[in-house]
Length: 99
Image (cartoon, rainbow, N blue to C red; front, side, top):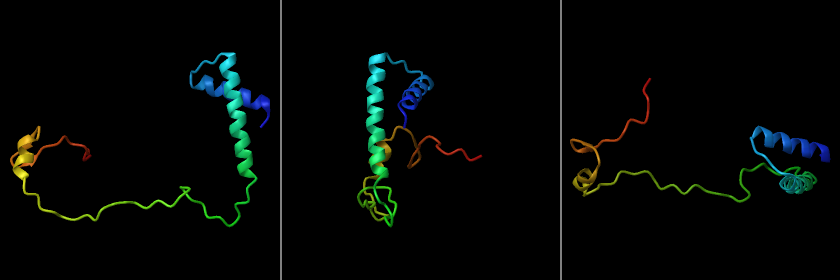
């Protein structure tokens, strides 16, 4: 990317973001943008042919417990401390609009 484009793009993004930068901070941002773009250019030089796209650098497995019904002996204590209740149930605000 050309130097002129970097400066113009940063000024445009700053303007759209309603951010103001003095010349010193703009110089720092330009240097950081150059560094990031240089790193991206290095990544573009890598041969990724045959490598499957992934969303994470390492394999991540969901740690969900098995969904099962369990008895709870202290039902009355929960109802007793609930801020709002209706009979033997905890009353919560409506979160889904059924229209």
